[in-house]
Image 1 (cartoon, rainbow, N blue to C red):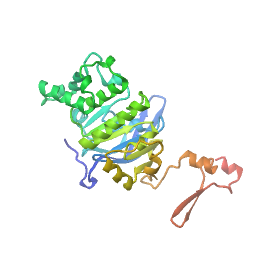
Image 2: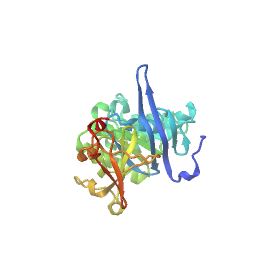
Image 3: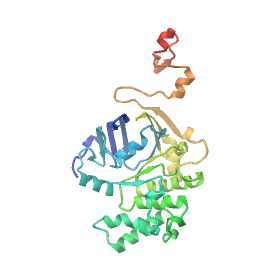
Image 4: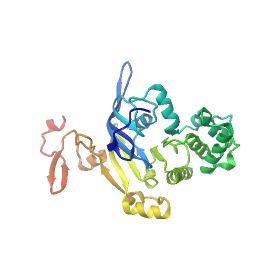
Length: 318
């Protein structure tokens, strides 16, 4: 494929610069992404969180080739998604990315057994024969812990089992990136934990890059990096502390104790290319800040934000 990314990107498999997406109708115009900048390293397991309408699913759809950006730059595995032709984009979606949806009915055909659901994407690949694809489908089901359910149909599988079959389907054509949109949104907490463990195992054993969009805040204790999106931009990142990461590498996984993610991750605000930073509403509320004016000062190595106490009432209302 054409349009390779610059060599200075390093081992970055996803890079977007000033990414903008605008949805237009006859009456309204919505800016879903407002100059988003992000990088995902090859082999990384990360999560994207944010409120409904924050832009996180739009961002995932951009990476998945399901929607095209309005402006900005988006490179995935060295390909400029702005410049791919329609046929190149089809191949990109077939071989570079795998997608796991929240809606199980979108993942599986109900009249096929599990192994044929997994085999189906392989049949569109020219280098995959019938017997070879069947054997690979069975291996993938074993990889997600469902070899004993290979002949089961949709109605014979639990919600968690359906989602694990969906993960196997997403891996059918050996993608380099696995994208999951709210993969645990329709299952109970215990099943959600098992699904996340499946993602961790795939990341660890296959070196697969995995990006998960979720509203589940407890995901922080299950991945190495958590990116928060607010109003179409990345507002903060939580990155696992190096000492904790080393200890987890020794035991082969992340902790699952309640509340541990507050100590195992360090949170950072993210500056955009113009030096702007989003201040969480709860921080402003704690300071009693209303309106759009604050005081800023530098004290030593700290930037201090304080309420504008000296404003007249008329100014505060602006």
